[in-house]
Image (cartoon, rainbow, N blue to C red; front, top):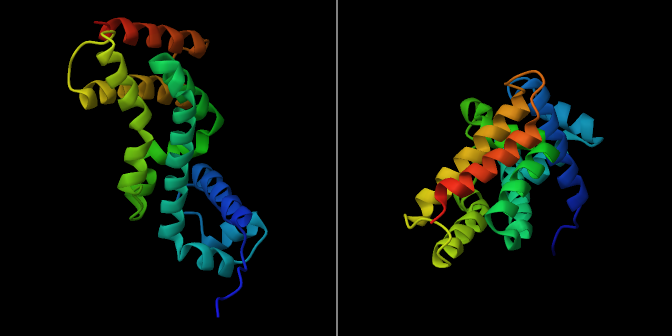
Length: 191
């Protein structure tokens, strides 16, 4: 006989969100499962039951972030490279804690908590497909698709990371800078 479901998917999602926020604010070393459970209004046994332990919880947070990012990129894919670029920044600004956890490296330095390779790779599929489609249509330079995709990703990632860290002139117009960067990327890779 199967055990009844004690913990709902909404509790799982709440634990993922709370963990991302706590780790972003305090760092992974200072966050305990007790802190996570208290912030989510549940017990530590619920956390252990759903995730197994701290390392598994942190990995689930990062995987969840990559899945959410992928969904955002997939939804923006009909807009081509420009749409993907806009969606990248929008997602990062709306999910700053997750973005920093996914790409900041703090978790990997603390515990064995790399994203699942297939989940992280899937997040890049909309960009790879858009690059391939633009090349096929003759709008982008011919070069290995993965190299072009990683180069474009790195350019938008760098600017978004600077914006989130507020590294730049105090009066920086980040939206204008980002739009200019997207235009420059498009011109730089144009066929």
